[in-house]
Image 1: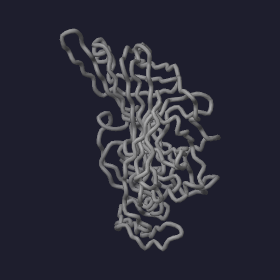
Image 2: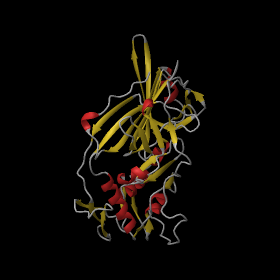
Image 3: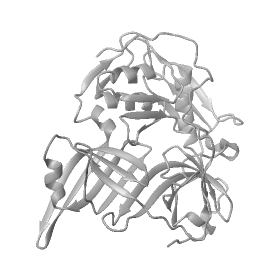
Image 4: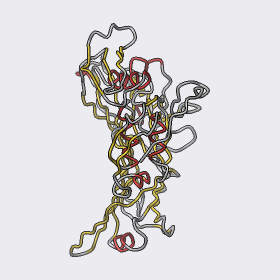
Length: 379
Protein backbone atom coordinates (compact mmCIF):
# COMPACT_ATOMS: atom_id res chain seq x y z
CA UNK A 1 0.00 0.00 0.00
CA UNK A 2 1.28 3.45 -0.79
CA UNK A 3 1.35 6.56 1.37
CA UNK A 4 0.47 10.13 0.45
CA UNK A 5 3.21 12.66 -0.20
CA UNK A 6 4.27 15.14 2.46
CA UNK A 7 3.06 18.67 1.80
CA UNK A 8 5.01 21.18 3.89
CA UNK A 9 3.06 24.00 5.44
CA UNK A 10 2.98 26.47 8.31
CA UNK A 11 2.95 24.87 11.79
CA UNK A 12 -0.41 24.73 13.53
CA UNK A 13 -1.31 27.68 15.72
CA UNK A 14 -0.02 27.21 19.24
CA UNK A 15 3.07 25.21 18.32
CA UNK A 16 3.61 21.58 19.24
CA UNK A 17 0.30 19.71 19.54
CA UNK A 18 -0.46 18.32 22.97
CA UNK A 19 -3.16 16.19 24.49
CA UNK A 20 -6.38 17.68 25.83
CA UNK A 21 -5.83 19.78 28.95
CA UNK A 22 -8.69 19.87 31.48
CA UNK A 23 -10.22 23.31 31.98
CA UNK A 24 -9.90 22.76 35.72
CA UNK A 25 -8.23 20.22 37.98
CA UNK A 26 -10.38 17.21 38.79
CA UNK A 27 -10.44 16.13 42.43
CA UNK A 28 -11.22 13.26 44.75
CA UNK A 29 -11.56 15.18 48.00
CA UNK A 30 -11.40 13.91 51.56
CA UNK A 31 -14.73 12.78 53.00
CA UNK A 32 -15.88 11.02 56.14
CA UNK A 33 -17.39 8.29 53.96
CA UNK A 34 -17.57 7.55 50.24
CA UNK A 35 -21.06 6.17 49.78
CA UNK A 36 -22.12 5.93 46.13
CA UNK A 37 -25.07 4.13 44.58
CA UNK A 38 -23.64 2.79 41.33
CA UNK A 39 -25.54 2.19 38.10
CA UNK A 40 -23.97 -0.48 35.87
CA UNK A 41 -25.38 -1.80 32.59
CA UNK A 42 -24.15 -4.03 29.75
CA UNK A 43 -25.99 -3.78 26.43
CA UNK A 44 -25.79 -5.82 23.22
CA UNK A 45 -25.23 -3.14 20.56
CA UNK A 46 -26.72 -5.33 17.84
CA UNK A 47 -30.25 -5.01 19.22
CA UNK A 48 -29.87 -2.64 22.22
CA UNK A 49 -30.96 -5.46 24.56
CA UNK A 50 -29.66 -5.45 28.13
CA UNK A 51 -27.35 -8.37 28.98
CA UNK A 52 -27.60 -10.05 32.38
CA UNK A 53 -24.11 -10.17 33.91
CA UNK A 54 -22.72 -10.91 37.36
CA UNK A 55 -19.49 -8.93 37.13
CA UNK A 56 -17.47 -6.83 34.68
CA UNK A 57 -13.82 -5.77 34.62
CA UNK A 58 -11.98 -3.54 32.13
CA UNK A 59 -8.33 -2.55 31.93
CA UNK A 60 -5.69 -0.77 29.86
CA UNK A 61 -2.05 0.19 30.33
CA UNK A 62 0.57 2.37 28.64
CA UNK A 63 1.85 -0.42 26.40
CA UNK A 64 -1.55 -1.90 25.47
CA UNK A 65 -3.33 0.25 22.93
CA UNK A 66 -6.72 -1.38 23.57
CA UNK A 67 -9.03 -1.64 26.55
CA UNK A 68 -9.80 -5.26 27.41
CA UNK A 69 -13.07 -6.52 28.84
CA UNK A 70 -13.97 -9.59 30.86
CA UNK A 71 -17.48 -10.37 32.09
CA UNK A 72 -19.47 -13.31 33.39
CA UNK A 73 -23.12 -14.12 33.71
CA UNK A 74 -25.72 -16.88 33.53
CA UNK A 75 -25.48 -19.61 30.91
CA UNK A 76 -28.09 -17.95 28.67
CA UNK A 77 -25.46 -15.31 27.79
CA UNK A 78 -23.61 -17.89 25.70
CA UNK A 79 -26.47 -18.47 23.27
CA UNK A 80 -27.17 -14.75 23.03
CA UNK A 81 -23.61 -13.75 22.14
CA UNK A 82 -22.77 -16.62 19.77
CA UNK A 83 -26.00 -16.05 17.83
CA UNK A 84 -26.71 -13.29 15.34
CA UNK A 85 -24.27 -11.02 13.57
CA UNK A 86 -20.64 -11.68 14.43
CA UNK A 87 -18.54 -10.38 16.03
CA UNK A 88 -20.91 -9.18 18.71
CA UNK A 89 -20.39 -5.70 20.12
CA UNK A 90 -21.33 -4.65 23.65
CA UNK A 91 -21.55 -1.40 25.55
CA UNK A 92 -20.66 -1.12 29.23
CA UNK A 93 -21.90 1.89 31.18
CA UNK A 94 -20.82 2.68 34.74
CA UNK A 95 -22.42 5.76 36.31
CA UNK A 96 -22.74 7.42 32.90
CA UNK A 97 -19.20 6.52 31.72
CA UNK A 98 -19.30 4.42 28.55
CA UNK A 99 -17.03 1.82 26.94
CA UNK A 100 -17.71 -0.17 23.77
CA UNK A 101 -16.10 -3.49 22.90
CA UNK A 102 -15.87 -6.08 20.15
CA UNK A 103 -16.46 -9.51 21.70
CA UNK A 104 -13.43 -11.73 20.97
CA UNK A 105 -14.27 -14.90 22.86
CA UNK A 106 -17.26 -16.53 24.54
CA UNK A 107 -17.19 -19.62 26.71
CA UNK A 108 -19.40 -21.49 29.14
CA UNK A 109 -18.85 -23.85 32.06
CA UNK A 110 -21.50 -26.46 32.70
CA UNK A 111 -21.71 -28.25 36.03
CA UNK A 112 -24.33 -29.75 38.27
CA UNK A 113 -26.56 -26.95 39.49
CA UNK A 114 -26.08 -24.47 36.68
CA UNK A 115 -24.15 -23.02 33.77
CA UNK A 116 -21.96 -19.91 33.76
CA UNK A 117 -20.93 -17.97 30.65
CA UNK A 118 -17.92 -15.69 30.32
CA UNK A 119 -16.89 -13.41 27.49
CA UNK A 120 -13.95 -11.17 26.66
CA UNK A 121 -13.56 -8.24 24.32
CA UNK A 122 -11.37 -5.39 23.17
CA UNK A 123 -11.91 -1.75 22.20
CA UNK A 124 -13.63 -0.98 18.89
CA UNK A 125 -10.22 0.05 17.51
CA UNK A 126 -9.35 -3.65 17.28
CA UNK A 127 -11.43 -3.68 14.07
CA UNK A 128 -8.42 -1.98 12.41
CA UNK A 129 -6.13 -4.78 13.62
CA UNK A 130 -5.90 -8.56 13.72
CA UNK A 131 -7.91 -10.65 13.09
CA UNK A 132 -10.31 -8.21 11.45
CA UNK A 133 -7.86 -6.58 9.02
CA UNK A 134 -5.31 -8.33 6.83
CA UNK A 135 -1.58 -8.02 7.32
CA UNK A 136 -0.13 -5.90 4.48
CA UNK A 137 3.21 -4.58 3.30
CA UNK A 138 3.50 -0.82 3.73
CA UNK A 139 5.99 1.60 2.14
CA UNK A 140 5.70 5.38 2.04
CA UNK A 141 5.60 6.44 -1.61
CA UNK A 142 7.07 9.93 -1.38
CA UNK A 143 8.00 12.00 1.69
CA UNK A 144 5.38 11.69 4.43
CA UNK A 145 5.04 12.71 8.05
CA UNK A 146 4.52 10.26 10.87
CA UNK A 147 0.93 11.42 11.27
CA UNK A 148 0.29 10.98 7.54
CA UNK A 149 1.66 7.43 7.55
CA UNK A 150 -0.68 6.52 10.43
CA UNK A 151 -3.69 8.23 8.86
CA UNK A 152 -3.22 6.95 5.32
CA UNK A 153 -2.85 3.37 6.53
CA UNK A 154 -6.33 3.73 8.03
CA UNK A 155 -8.16 5.43 5.14
CA UNK A 156 -10.13 2.29 4.43
CA UNK A 157 -10.54 1.15 8.04
CA UNK A 158 -12.03 4.50 9.05
CA UNK A 159 -10.08 4.47 12.33
CA UNK A 160 -9.72 8.00 13.69
CA UNK A 161 -6.12 8.71 14.74
CA UNK A 162 -5.72 11.66 17.12
CA UNK A 163 -2.12 12.81 16.75
CA UNK A 164 -0.90 14.48 19.97
CA UNK A 165 2.88 14.32 19.52
CA UNK A 166 5.08 16.59 17.42
CA UNK A 167 5.11 15.48 13.78
CA UNK A 168 8.21 14.92 11.68
CA UNK A 169 9.16 14.18 8.07
CA UNK A 170 9.95 10.63 6.89
CA UNK A 171 11.76 10.59 3.51
CA UNK A 172 10.55 8.60 0.52
CA UNK A 173 10.43 4.79 1.10
CA UNK A 174 12.04 4.90 4.53
CA UNK A 175 8.90 3.57 6.21
CA UNK A 176 8.77 -0.14 5.40
CA UNK A 177 6.61 -2.36 7.57
CA UNK A 178 4.46 -5.46 7.48
CA UNK A 179 1.32 -5.50 9.61
CA UNK A 180 -2.29 -4.42 10.00
CA UNK A 181 -3.41 -0.78 9.75
CA UNK A 182 -3.59 -0.56 13.55
CA UNK A 183 -0.09 -2.03 13.81
CA UNK A 184 1.13 0.80 11.53
CA UNK A 185 -0.03 3.33 14.12
CA UNK A 186 1.75 1.42 16.88
CA UNK A 187 4.94 1.19 14.80
CA UNK A 188 5.09 4.92 14.07
CA UNK A 189 4.40 5.75 17.73
CA UNK A 190 7.06 3.32 18.89
CA UNK A 191 9.72 5.19 16.90
CA UNK A 192 9.33 8.29 19.07
CA UNK A 193 8.51 6.45 22.31
CA UNK A 194 4.87 7.54 22.18
CA UNK A 195 1.87 5.80 23.77
CA UNK A 196 -1.18 4.64 21.79
CA UNK A 197 -4.51 4.51 23.64
CA UNK A 198 -7.87 3.47 22.22
CA UNK A 199 -10.91 5.64 22.80
CA UNK A 200 -13.24 4.18 25.40
CA UNK A 201 -16.40 4.28 23.32
CA UNK A 202 -15.45 5.58 19.85
CA UNK A 203 -13.65 3.99 16.92
CA UNK A 204 -10.37 5.80 17.33
CA UNK A 205 -6.98 5.96 19.04
CA UNK A 206 -4.80 8.69 20.54
CA UNK A 207 -1.05 8.90 19.94
CA UNK A 208 0.30 10.64 23.06
CA UNK A 209 3.71 11.55 24.48
CA UNK A 210 5.00 8.98 26.99
CA UNK A 211 5.96 11.95 29.17
CA UNK A 212 3.81 15.06 28.51
CA UNK A 213 6.23 16.68 30.98
CA UNK A 214 9.51 15.13 32.13
CA UNK A 215 9.55 14.01 35.78
CA UNK A 216 11.97 16.75 36.80
CA UNK A 217 9.23 19.23 35.75
CA UNK A 218 6.35 17.59 37.62
CA UNK A 219 6.83 19.66 40.77
CA UNK A 220 5.91 22.82 38.85
CA UNK A 221 3.34 21.25 36.48
CA UNK A 222 -0.39 21.57 37.29
CA UNK A 223 -1.86 18.07 37.81
CA UNK A 224 -4.88 16.72 35.93
CA UNK A 225 -6.23 15.09 39.09
CA UNK A 226 -5.77 15.67 42.83
CA UNK A 227 -6.42 12.70 45.13
CA UNK A 228 -6.89 13.08 48.87
CA UNK A 229 -5.18 10.23 50.72
CA UNK A 230 -8.39 9.58 52.67
CA UNK A 231 -9.91 8.34 49.39
CA UNK A 232 -7.25 5.65 48.88
CA UNK A 233 -8.81 2.27 49.69
CA UNK A 234 -5.41 0.57 49.56
CA UNK A 235 -1.92 1.33 48.30
CA UNK A 236 0.96 -0.86 47.17
CA UNK A 237 4.43 0.62 46.75
CA UNK A 238 6.86 -1.31 44.54
CA UNK A 239 10.35 -0.12 43.66
CA UNK A 240 11.11 0.02 39.94
CA UNK A 241 14.49 1.76 39.83
CA UNK A 242 16.44 2.18 36.61
CA UNK A 243 19.90 3.70 36.03
CA UNK A 244 19.91 7.46 36.26
CA UNK A 245 20.71 8.33 32.66
CA UNK A 246 21.09 12.01 31.82
CA UNK A 247 21.95 11.78 28.12
CA UNK A 248 21.37 9.56 25.11
CA UNK A 249 22.45 9.45 21.47
CA UNK A 250 19.56 8.61 19.15
CA UNK A 251 19.98 7.84 15.48
CA UNK A 252 18.18 6.86 12.35
CA UNK A 253 19.66 4.31 10.01
CA UNK A 254 19.81 4.53 6.20
CA UNK A 255 18.54 8.12 5.92
CA UNK A 256 18.33 9.04 9.56
CA UNK A 257 19.64 11.93 11.55
CA UNK A 258 21.80 11.65 14.67
CA UNK A 259 21.07 13.61 17.82
CA UNK A 260 22.22 13.94 21.41
CA UNK A 261 19.46 14.47 23.96
CA UNK A 262 20.31 15.46 27.53
CA UNK A 263 18.41 16.55 30.58
CA UNK A 264 18.46 20.33 31.04
CA UNK A 265 20.88 21.36 33.76
CA UNK A 266 23.16 18.37 33.17
CA UNK A 267 26.03 17.65 30.80
CA UNK A 268 24.37 14.40 29.82
CA UNK A 269 27.47 12.52 30.91
CA UNK A 270 25.64 9.45 32.27
CA UNK A 271 24.92 7.96 28.85
CA UNK A 272 22.16 5.54 27.92
CA UNK A 273 23.25 3.07 25.20
CA UNK A 274 22.79 4.27 21.62
CA UNK A 275 19.22 3.91 20.32
CA UNK A 276 18.54 3.51 16.60
CA UNK A 277 15.35 3.35 14.54
CA UNK A 278 14.90 3.85 10.77
CA UNK A 279 12.11 6.36 11.44
CA UNK A 280 14.29 8.72 13.49
CA UNK A 281 14.79 10.97 10.51
CA UNK A 282 14.34 14.50 11.85
CA UNK A 283 15.05 16.52 15.00
CA UNK A 284 11.51 16.37 16.52
CA UNK A 285 11.57 12.57 16.34
CA UNK A 286 15.04 12.36 17.87
CA UNK A 287 14.11 14.68 20.73
CA UNK A 288 10.86 12.88 21.56
CA UNK A 289 12.51 9.45 21.58
CA UNK A 290 15.24 10.85 23.83
CA UNK A 291 12.67 12.35 26.19
CA UNK A 292 10.88 9.01 26.48
CA UNK A 293 14.17 7.31 27.40
CA UNK A 294 15.41 9.93 29.87
CA UNK A 295 11.99 10.34 31.46
CA UNK A 296 11.99 6.65 32.39
CA UNK A 297 15.43 6.89 34.04
CA UNK A 298 16.35 7.06 37.68
CA UNK A 299 14.92 5.99 41.01
CA UNK A 300 11.20 5.35 40.81
CA UNK A 301 8.33 3.23 42.01
CA UNK A 302 5.09 1.83 40.69
CA UNK A 303 2.40 2.78 43.19
CA UNK A 304 -0.90 0.92 42.83
CA UNK A 305 -3.87 2.64 44.42
CA UNK A 306 -7.42 1.38 44.68
CA UNK A 307 -9.81 4.33 44.47
CA UNK A 308 -13.56 4.89 44.42
CA UNK A 309 -15.25 5.77 41.14
CA UNK A 310 -16.79 9.21 41.66
CA UNK A 311 -18.55 10.98 38.79
CA UNK A 312 -19.94 14.11 40.47
CA UNK A 313 -19.15 17.65 39.34
CA UNK A 314 -15.39 18.19 39.32
CA UNK A 315 -14.66 14.53 40.05
CA UNK A 316 -12.56 12.38 37.69
CA UNK A 317 -14.68 9.25 37.27
CA UNK A 318 -12.28 6.61 35.94
CA UNK A 319 -8.75 7.96 35.47
CA UNK A 320 -6.90 7.76 32.14
CA UNK A 321 -3.39 6.66 31.20
CA UNK A 322 -1.20 9.76 30.84
CA UNK A 323 -2.91 11.88 33.50
CA UNK A 324 -0.62 13.54 36.04
CA UNK A 325 -1.95 12.96 39.57
CA UNK A 326 -1.08 14.80 42.78
CA UNK A 327 -1.55 12.54 45.80
CA UNK A 328 -2.03 14.39 49.09
CA UNK A 329 -0.04 11.88 51.14
CA UNK A 330 0.13 12.73 54.88
CA UNK A 331 3.94 12.32 54.75
CA UNK A 332 4.34 14.69 51.81
CA UNK A 333 2.30 15.31 48.67
CA UNK A 334 3.76 13.70 45.56
CA UNK A 335 3.12 13.47 41.82
CA UNK A 336 2.59 10.37 39.74
CA UNK A 337 1.80 9.64 36.10
CA UNK A 338 -1.02 7.16 35.40
CA UNK A 339 0.45 4.10 33.65
CA UNK A 340 -2.39 1.58 33.97
CA UNK A 341 -6.07 1.66 34.88
CA UNK A 342 -8.53 -1.09 35.65
CA UNK A 343 -12.13 -0.79 36.79
CA UNK A 344 -14.21 -3.64 38.17
CA UNK A 345 -17.91 -3.89 38.96
CA UNK A 346 -19.11 -6.86 41.01
CA UNK A 347 -22.62 -7.97 42.00
CA UNK A 348 -23.92 -6.13 38.94
CA UNK A 349 -27.19 -8.09 39.04
CA UNK A 350 -27.87 -7.10 42.67
CA UNK A 351 -26.11 -4.16 44.36
CA UNK A 352 -23.15 -3.09 42.19
CA UNK A 353 -19.83 -2.45 43.91
CA UNK A 354 -17.34 -0.52 41.77
CA UNK A 355 -13.65 0.15 42.31
CA UNK A 356 -10.80 1.33 40.10
CA UNK A 357 -7.15 0.40 40.42
CA UNK A 358 -4.59 2.90 39.16
CA UNK A 359 -0.86 2.32 38.68
CA UNK A 360 1.15 5.52 39.12
CA UNK A 361 4.75 6.05 38.04
CA UNK A 362 6.35 7.94 40.92
CA UNK A 363 9.89 9.26 40.79
CA UNK A 364 11.51 8.66 44.15
CA UNK A 365 14.91 10.27 44.30
CA UNK A 366 14.18 11.74 47.73
CA UNK A 367 11.94 8.98 49.10
CA UNK A 368 12.97 6.94 52.13
CA UNK A 369 11.66 3.50 51.19
CA UNK A 370 11.82 2.24 54.78
CA UNK A 371 9.25 4.62 56.23
CA UNK A 372 6.20 4.22 54.01
CA UNK A 373 2.97 4.78 55.98
CA UNK A 374 0.44 1.93 56.09
CA UNK A 375 -2.42 2.22 53.59
CA UNK A 376 -5.66 3.83 54.73
CA UNK A 377 -8.53 1.35 54.56
CA UNK A 378 -12.01 2.42 53.48
CA UNK A 379 -15.19 0.42 53.79
